[in-house]
Image (cartoon, rainbow, N blue to C red; front, side, top):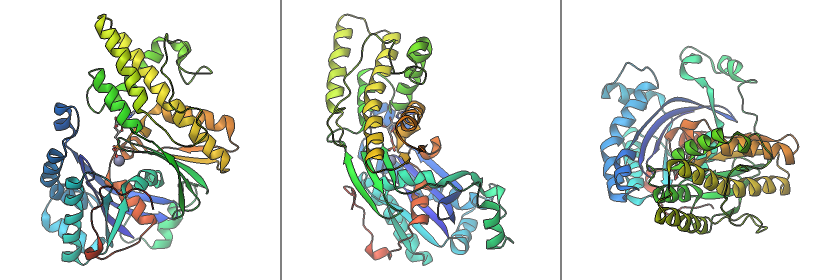
Length: 394
Ligand code: KG4
Ligand code: ZN
């Protein structure tokens, strides 16, 4: 099954063509993303009207390019894209929530139109679940490695089975950490899952972005906080989170890890933001906020957030007897989070396996929407699909 997938829930306009290889593996034939991030960096955050206006500009060119690139990089015409949509595509997947209403509408209404015009079914996708399903994309399987035309289904499968399958075992724990959400889920199968807990206020990425603003870091602050934390660790080798017992040991100060011992699977990050704000204000008043101190603060903030995320994820895996943990969402692009989670999972779980998507599939992208749709192909007619900005879990 070959799917055209569209993602427009926030500030990225993305289209991808994906194909299911087996029950665990999806390959990406093309994945094109236009982002209005630079515009939002000038306002220090996303203004929804601006994001929606940018979506309108990018949506059709992005779809055209994704369709054309699924066959060849050199063809750019609309005629070609039309032909590919008509001949190659079995269904169109789209994010229907959660997200910004204006941004979601652009994707959903475009897909409804294409569905009607080309007579293709729609697969509506929950953006949050798709973040975890990015782990089912096999980056080693690309269009050009496996011949498409003139290859029988069997010979294609022979090439791909075994070594390339992701071998994700059930049940597994999923941790979604993005700019808008922080949630822990237990998956019994691809379709059967249970929400275990989530943030009561700010999401992990949101906390990083807001703290970044206090420190005058560029928006979104997650990548810059990772960079500065790594620099701090390099300059204080003994305190490197990956080397010693605890992390930030060489640091002079720490921030509280909120709800670390609450005994449930919930999170809260708004108190941390307030604590950092007071600290930064005091340093500013004394003209002490140097570049080096900013690195130190970033490291301490990362440690406080990741410590609670990791502890509760491993606790959930232990409680529900899972050896596999899947990470997803923009914050899962952070190497320290993934590596430290791997270390802790190995320490406390038998046969621990921790997967995080490739960096380009961690932040918002259409390939992950396609991956979810390819593995859960529940089709709906265009009249039955509506944007749901407040969509959460069933
Ligand atoms: O999943 P995503 O692209 O959008 C939402 O669905 O929210 O996540 C964006 C979030 C932002 O808060 C951004 O600061 C954070 O992901 N992020 C990171 C990193 N890259 C992006 N956080 C920590 N380390 C990173 N390398
Ligand atoms: Zn997202």
